[in-house]
Amino acid sequence: MFIVVAIVAAFCMLISTSSRALRLFNSLALIALLGLAGEMILRVFGQGPQSIWGGFFSWDALSALLLGVIVVIAAYVIVYSFSYMEHEVAAGKVPQSRLPRYYFWVWMFIGTMLWVVSTPNLGLLWVGIEGTTLATALLVGFYREKTAVEAAWKYIVLCTVGISFALLGTMILYAASGRINGYSLAALDWRLLVGMAPQLDPALVKLGCIFAFIGYGAKVGFVPMHPWLPDAHSQAPSPVSALLSGVLLNCALYAILRWHILVRQTGLGPDFSGKLLLVFGLISLGAMVAFILLQKDIKRLLAYSSVEHMGIIALGLGLGTPLAVWGACFHLILHALTKANLFVVVGRVVQMMGTRQIPKIRGVMSLWPYTGGILFMGLLAITGMPPFGTFRSEISIMAGFFQNHHPILGFLTALFLAVIFAGFLYHFLGMLFGTPGERCLKDKGEGKEVLWLAVPMILVLMLGVFVPEPLNQALNQVVELILGRGGEYGEFGKLTQLF
Image (tube, rainbow, N blue to C red; front, side, top):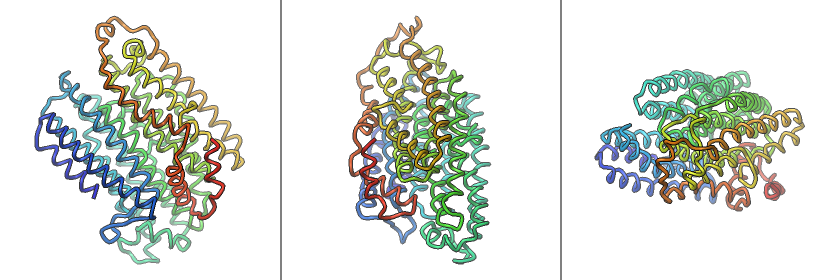
């Protein structure tokens, strides 16, 4: 089972400090992880929900989607970590003796995220989310510099406070379900909760939902619970930043989605939790405009962009139309690929330039054309420009505003996205085409092996041109699960192909 693979891999990393041995252990673990997870994903989308160990672990379409995102981004990030961390060792930033602990905590982080999307119990899901905080805190402060340690403490404090709200919401839900099904661990089993949802006390469910959305929303990075995110993303090693932005935020959003699906089935109906998502989404998107326009640190810029994109996904889910929800699920995949790629490429640029300050990063395209080309593709993808897949997903979400008769919200969303695009264009064009400083001109070396870093961008580009039918059908299954509908997508599958 792939959770066991991640935990075993973590402890194997402590066997040797040799870079060659660490590469071997990581490679074997990744092969096992991709094989086992890939088989489970195919079984879920081909045969329906799957469970093992007497139902202790279970996967449906939604958890299989997140499982796929986790293993793909994890494989990409770990492979990139080989060269990145070896460069950090060569530069004297990290001693060789600490590399095993880096990979140990990365694999523990991956294991906790796999736990989150594998447990059907909302209480154990909370345990997994809290576990991700503990695993990543030491990675955020890995460099042991003052700013890194401060960012790690800020991350622990804010996320722990937020997760405490989610725990309170879970306890309230336990009280509501326990009255019906008995006070046992099964009272928080998501599969049973959905079936008994109409019998749950609406007042208790509403209160629990509010606490859960605030608590897990802190981990997602929703405004105003987001202050930890730019500090943690900017201070962590770039591969860790890629995992935080591309996967961790989605795992926290997954927890919110489980609550959203449950609340939709109760006496509260679909509007209550949907409106909460709309509020958090619009505020998170709008608030990021000023931060993105005025930002001078490239990694903090990408961190604020993550808050923006979590807001976009929340808007699509909150709108609740099939096309908007499809667009939100599609955007979740595309954002993970794009942001992981951007953090990886930017990490490479920061290593070569020796600075994270945007005004000091100039002439990337002339100095390192391969890296600059990938960075330019990342600019187009992260701002939703055609023909990249993010354009398709954002258009699908925008269509939901007009299908749901929210033209004003649609206009505000389009306005925010336009201003954010202008801000990214301003920052990135200077970095790509500006005049490089004399210090940068001394080292123009760039290995062509950097081309493999563009794989996620190529995928995002291809998905903007054509969505394979198996992926489209998988997304349709996720939409059906979220909306609690069946047999209503005969025209929906055709509709998604129009964008």
